[in-house]
Image (cartoon, rainbow, N blue to C red; front, side):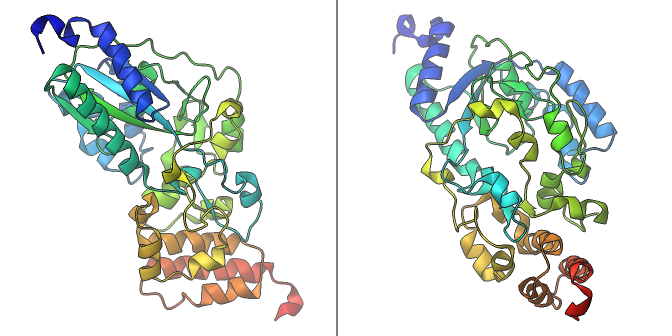
Length: 363
């Protein structure tokens, strides 16, 4: 490619081409952000100082590399941010599952294939396509895999605003989507950051089962069911167990009630279609999976990251909250000899809860 024909001589045209390439590769939105995150850095440091990250020590470990892209990847001057919708249109109705205490609720984003793998491959293809256009350039792909402030970057790239529940919301797309980033050394024009449109709405704050949204735009992860069922490695505090209901992996309540999700789009990605009937499965059935079965049935799934013991811990809590039945009681008793003390502790709690629900003449 001759110097006179280099796309780098027309950054705006190159940015437009990047957006077009991204859409062709299956992303629903593509934007470009700069690297200034000073205001977000201050908010992050306050959040950490308050201890709201709980056991997620990695949030502190990387220091300011999370909020300073050029410190994480030297030479970074522009960030390409992408969005990929995941809402599975053919999944069982979320509210119906939540209202059925005998069924397990898995956050809609985790019903199908691990999104990390899907987005990473697409972003790599975008980088490869860019290399063909501009020649070799410096870049690094991120999909929730390193110290990256993905939501502020996506906001700055014009993909949406950070709502009161601290998730990103798109004006015409709701919030059921994944984010990914391509840190680059390409000098690209940044998009206009998205403006906030939450207004006076507080639906997400009122809907949170455990009161984790402690103030507008402020989340205490230590109270969040997504954190408790996924990130938290130990015993789930008893004060939150009843409120967990039948949620065994993640929680969608704050998004389910968000009025902007009336614009959410159903995914066209087959990889995000529910696997192993996780959108309709009963708690008793999932609790019966041996570790070998669990490893086989969660292959390629984001759920794999929590391990079998946490899986059983979470389901034990949900079984404790389930309607009393002989099947539930028998399922719980079958795990009383589990080698993991954490699992047994939650099973005993669940059995006590079940006993409280049984009628006096049930023996």
